[in-house]
Image 1: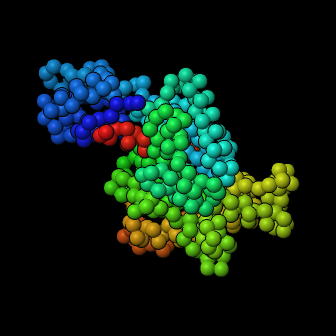
Image 2 (image 1 turned 90 degrees about the horizontal axis):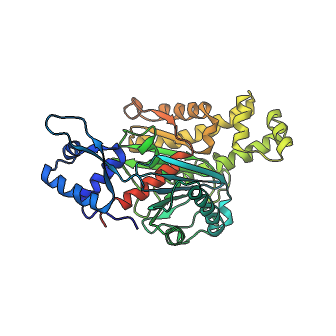
Image 3 (image 1 turned 60 degrees about the vertical axis):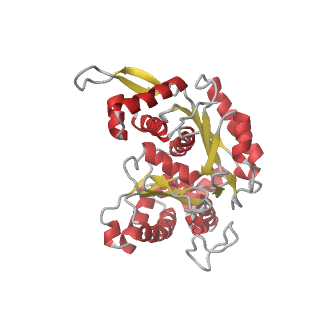
Length: 393
């Protein structure tokens, strides 16, 4: 098992080297406000553990040049992002650079045992490719509420058979390393914060639209999870009291009206009723419809597909407008599988937010699409586990 730092100073050094890359002792001392002697002591202890190594000479600042320091290059972390219909698995180094990435379709309704067989198979393929001999830790995201910090799913609406399953314990035994588990949208937010569009933003919202809809909330640079881990479950905010039934048992939830599954349902209705020739052709060709088909039809100029995106984006925009008025974030990031709907979706969201929220909250508020795509979740998962491994034992 990877050595752990023994105090807060060592933990801060590791996280600075993770987030900022190799750095000189002098610069680290400035960032930490530590005396040279105290910093030297902590650095020597970290080098003894093998977590930190020398990395060439630093740029001259006058006087004798010191060595740059970096995290040990052989450290390896596994990032796992499980969605309702697909899973992504990646190996990163300690600076969370993705060294290898695999993704494949899965059905989360098959249950944790079947899903983790596929995840472990992808991890084994990455190891066999020479990317890792073993893992120093693994982070896992799942598409449902997670009781933190135990890493246990709690009554996830779209995940039958997962309630109470000991994800952290089971995967930890299989992988032979520490494991941390969180909701997938929280990990997407961590990924965007580390390497994406939210790199320098301390307070932002990260909305993920896939089979379900969730929101990662970052406050002061930290993910806010709430008292029991269920913060950000915006997919079950009601948008229509007489609306569609939802998997959670209620009616008219945002998720029941605009998500990957809801778009596929509405597209099927439109195709079967003859209101969309483009979607009818796609249904005839493949026997089923997806949110990607709606995006493709809209790009081809199909009016009904364009309306589906505009209406759904408008409902999501209404919910985000309420969140913006309440939270006053510095940025809203929109990601997930349904973002293939592109700028038509973004325009519908922006229209509602800028119209409904006060100018003080929206006057300098960017609302943007994620640029990391499926890597946001796996980078966030690696960030989650390194936060743990780089904390005092």
